[in-house]
Length: 291
Image (tube, rainbow, N blue to C red):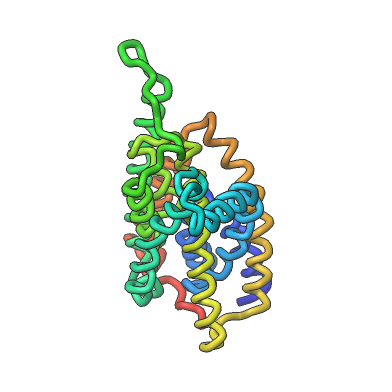
């Protein structure tokens, strides 16, 4: 991998990680369109450490409060009813599905799941799901001539069952094209949560999953020696800086705006990808995994 490739891929990772359009798909497609080698799942997981560091800094006050309350609840029974302590447990519960499936499906994630036809399918299908979820949320928030505005849940109302459903939605993002934020936010909206609550829990839930995945791939990379360390670290730093700016923008965007621009983008990109593969302009396995 060249330094120029790492710059572009780092920018792509930072720009797309927190938007509901799938960063793993865009890294894969960027390489395929440019005629580069597929950077691979290891590169994706390691550069996600950069974007997840941006989450740690942006939500640092929330994270410190949750971690502190959670640890205190281990010895202080009175703290177990505290919302922040409960949130700590809910993040743990929500992380179970992706932890189990991530280990179980490791070979598929690094191989068949990166087929461009599958990515095109997930881009379109999850785009439609996000569109439906967004429309239902808008209907509840706006009401109508014969409909009253309906209450939507906040994180104060997050239950263990809902936390687990959020986690199952997050696990779907192991398939490139699904999008971690897209799947979890869609799940949250369909369960009746506000846009802000769904996005905030989505970002918090991603922390243990992404850091664990990155650490796993780092260990694997050290043993296998198949990662270009200089360019990969450079891309990770770029992803961190860009990712932080995107989080700040996105959290403001979702309070007043619809997700429909992302829905339209996903569907159009998926259709374009099917056309390119169908006409032979792009092979389903364009680019070989980098070693």
